[in-house]
Amino acid sequence: MIQEIELSKLKVHPKNVRKTYRDIDELAESIKAKGILQNLTVVPDPDEDGTYFVVIGNRRLTAARQAGLETAPCFVTEMSEKDQAATMLLENMQRDDLTIHEQAQGFQMVLDLGETEDGLAEKTGFSKTTIRRRLNIAKLDQEELQKKEAEDSFQLSLTDLYELEKIKSVEKRNKILKNASNSRDITASVRREIADEKREANSKKLIKMLKKNSIEAAPDSVSMEIYTGKWETVKTYSLTEDVPKSVDVKPDGKEKLYYYKQWNELKVIRRAKK
Image (cartoon, rainbow, N blue to C red; front, side, top):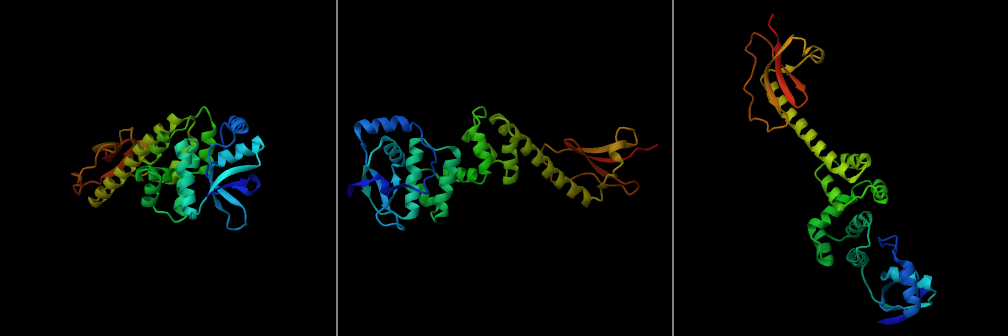
């Protein structure tokens, strides 16, 4: 049902993820000259009789107030809370008015209201992959995310944030985001972290196999003596390549063997013979 409703009885929806509006001055001038050309979609406020929340048209409401209008044409309807949130999210995403932070919070809010990923995908038309990616962004430190968005020189993009998904730890993702000085830093830091994680994982696998072969960790003194001729290398394993299924080195019973991690390699060493 379409009806004219006083602006004083219309409220910007509290669950509208868009917090800022662009080009309000221009829209206000247009409304002042031509009026509101498209109805607002509103739902009754359950806590205050005679008032309404604007589901579609919060930007027009803001501009209409600035233009000095007293009423606005409204389509009054009934919607569940999660349908209201999904509708506002879809409208804002289609207008391309949301920041990355607002998009992520919008998707998370709809799910928090009880919607499923499948239901959200059906209602909004976004793929489940897109939805999951936005939800991953919602897991980041939102305060830090907004800071990066506000830095014009940073030029944060969704592509940069998708790179962070390659890191399992959300804590590490936040650390990379915080320490990045520009968008290129994110990609470079992710690559370094992935390489570090691979080296660490390979190191653990190799050490486990070496220990089974009675090869012990090298004494602390090795770090100072490794280049003095007191030690010699028996075998070297790369930590940047795939780990072999088994290790082919073990003590012969006459001398001890030790493992020693050095840069991108794990070495099996022994005391040099005099």
